[in-house]
Length: 347
Image 1 (tube, one colour):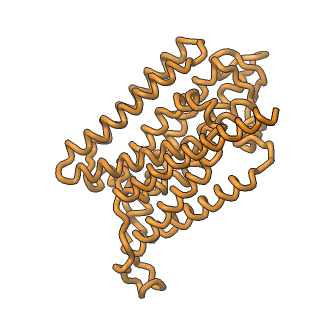
Image 2 (image 1 turned 120 degrees about the horizontal axis):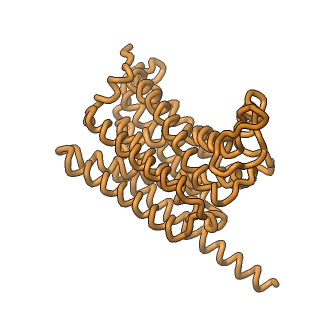
């Protein structure tokens, strides 16, 4: 058994250390500029500014995908397709995160002028935690090819769970991250009032954590729960840790703007859960088929690869993802509009 050292993961396949350094530096610069602009302004994010920033992040992702296609030799176009498939998958799955973020912000009664900063720092925490998770996943895949079976089965199980939740929604009012918040309140001195942008305040000579910091931690750690299905989903589209990291990073960078853009639209996407379950189930099947091709488990085909198992191309996967999202969004909006007309006629 070959164990891959963390540094070796940077040299897997097509992307060298320079690629990692430039991408990480770029992400840090973007986040630093974003954070400084947030701290300098107490204004509520407008729909126009959110749309402009979101278009910038999407343009950066497109430019990055084109850069991969042009600058990585004969494999560039294929790697670029993998990036775009991973980016679109992550972005679509991230919409589900937004529902949970809305619950967290509502439960903590975060003032709207502070929501943008809370989301931004929470997303930074999420980026760091996801990078660790991706590195662990990459090491596991390099050491054990049968991990793809686990990833595939987990995605199928998650897809079934999403369908069940869509059919019979959970009525519990517990906020995501509730146990984490309970732990923080027991272990640290906290206050219930917001103090502007401050993360900690000194009261009666003791340093206390403000609700703003607790919201940021809750968002960051709650996102990891979603990464349990989204990261294996991207590994179902590519075996390049670099692409998995960048697809996650670009999706998360625009998540704050997407939150404000879709705040009024999310309730109208009534069939989003079904669409996401189809995407996860599709990638889960793709992972299992890939695992059969790489099979080393003795109780499957005598430990030999199952060459008869069909391979699903990245072009087909990208097509399925896009078509599923388009159909889900169109059907959701049409259904919501029809329900609204019926309600108006009834009244």
